[in-house]
Length: 169
Image 1 (cartoon, rainbow, N blue to C red):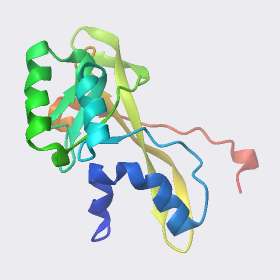
Image 2 (image 1 turned 180 degrees about the vertical axis):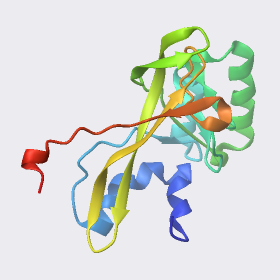
Image 3 (image 1 turned 30 degrees about the vertical axis):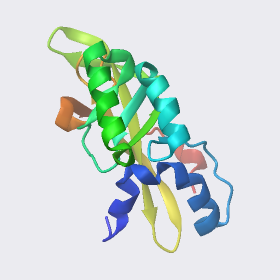
Image 4 (image 1 turned 45 degrees about the vertical axis):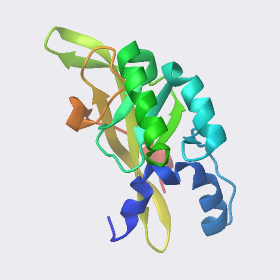
């Protein structure tokens, strides 16, 4: 990663992705961005506080799955703890709906079992911007977990892309 690209990892930029694509690429986004509430905005904070049990709340400067709440999997005590954190420092958090991640058969201690995954595609930027075949598939190794970060017990899986060589350029 080039110096300065870490700004894209700051979760406070998530709500602006659509506008950044339009500004920097002069294009309409192909994919929709995940709805993101900025807790620093009073109306967004009010929505988040009213729906904590349904949302995923993340620290804007956090990484690796630290400092987050997965509302549907959280206890009442964890939700109330996060409510206090949000009220004390709303500018430090964003919230998003809980996404339904795909599952993939995964070899775990008890055998083969479904585990949630997400795919991080690789994009090369130079004279052209290219999406390359493959990527990093992250897997939540704990049963039922939606947290795929390796620092939180997640792992990775090989990602294969089957290409039709007859029609390749």
